[in-house]
Length: 385
Image (cartoon, rainbow, N blue to C red; front, side):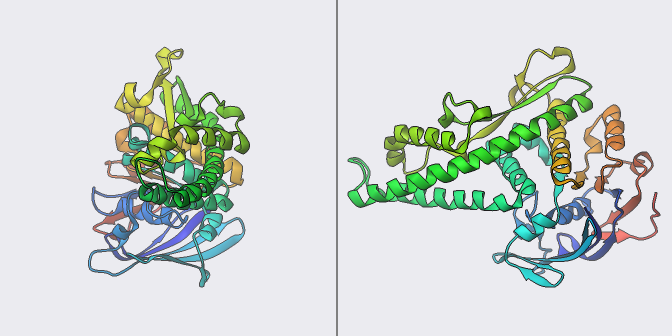
């Protein structure tokens, strides 16, 4: 899959620009704060997941009332023209070949992208929310039909929390509130178990790919990923099916319900789960430590890059096609050896778009196409590599 042509209108700092892309390695060069990242961000938005950097409202150029992204996307023998319109407060409108689609699922079935930027370090040392979002998006990228699981979970969680907030404190809920809570408890356990099962399945699939990439980038060592959920208790995650997870969640819910009624919120469930990232360096292969607390910033960055490249490898095998790889300013954060390794690794894996502010990056990358950006404009005259 690839994006052949991209047109941005009032998108971030782009008033209107048209970009032709190679099916191989595209290098976007320019000084900092010129719009390189914005170009990669627009490509990611075509996949139907919104911005990988923040709220979609920020995509609209100052002074404009909407941002537009137009693209010609090829997958297999099929080329589709995509139009996206972002309007603050009104969501996203998408058209495929001029026909409106009701949601983002059609975009997710058309194309998939993997985005890695400087802020992806938070995937390792940031809050659990970012790691949960990473897993939940990967669930949908692998099987777009599963996009309803997270939406249904969010709806159930919101309704259950609203009921807990409104329930009488002290002597327990009134009869009507208690009866309603039983209904939402059942939905909470059913949808929560489905979501947790999907996450566990994806995490098990991702781990060997990410571990292999970490060993390659770091020159040795080990990386392990595990799912952390207080409500699971002694349930082994590698053998837990939906029924087992549902039972475990229901049992845990019974134990914490008095505290939930007192505090007016759901205290356990997938909304509080996390992914633990353990790794060892090449010299200490037998000692696995929590990367959040014990790894250096360099090792954390290597670990985050391994997760993203592992995601790309997993999607490639599962979809029988290369997703689009988007690497934002990654070369500046790597030492020369790892920079050379990455440049070699991303050649021949389908379409990739890499941004860099580093002098000499064009020569080092040996890209199929070089795109120079200045002040939200694509500067003509830069020849292909």
